[in-house]
Image (cartoon, rainbow, N blue to C red; front, side, top):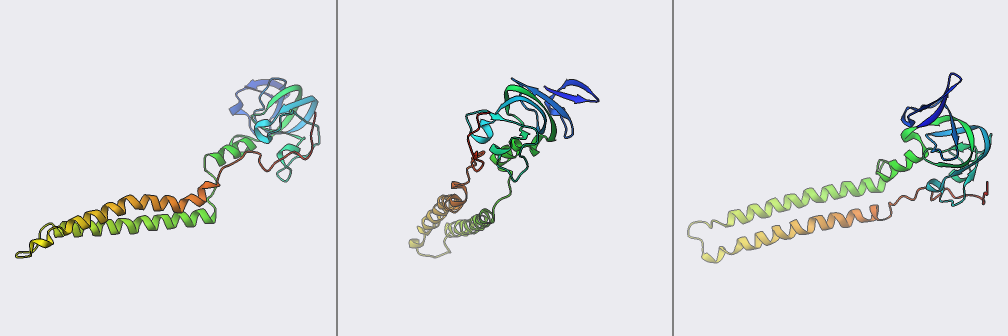
Amino acid sequence: MAKVRRGGVTRRVPAAEVVPGDVIEVAAGDRVPADARVLEVSALGVDEAMLTGESQSAGKQVGGAGGPGVPLGDRDGELFSGTLVVRGAATALVERTGAATEMGRIAGALEGRQPKSPLEADLAQASRRIGLLALAALATALLQALVTLVPPLGAPLALVPLPATGWALALGIAVLTPLLCDLIRWPATSGAGVRPGGDHQRSGSRTG
């Protein structure tokens, strides 16, 4: 639940019903329901460790820093969805909700909804091509094996063992193809971990 001030009246509504433009009120023990700009503050301290990695609570102030060009740890004029108020109280103007919040952006990245990089797209295309070529080779090997199962009339019996070669080739292709595709995809995925707040370090220790 969230405390929302609408029409001069403060009421509790489900956090999912908070929309940009609402004025919210938060106090110690409240979970911030949306990304918002601080309007009024009273000795506020917010636990933002899930976003910034900072163990100390973050102080907030009216007119403080904010905006996408400022590291998360330095945005002392904003509240972030999902963070916990540990002391004080504040009112704030909601700017972003849901997937548009900083927490929603990180969750989207962890779920893989971010667009692929050009390198990842090229590797994925190469992997698909190799898979198609391998399937074509497999089909050819199987066809050869089936044809040689019935030797032509009067053919020497020495030709009969040839299908074993075809089956061995088919089996080798079936086993090696996924291994080769994994090897091609590995460079693009091995370093794709996401570290929330990894590049948003605090410029200085804040004791607020």
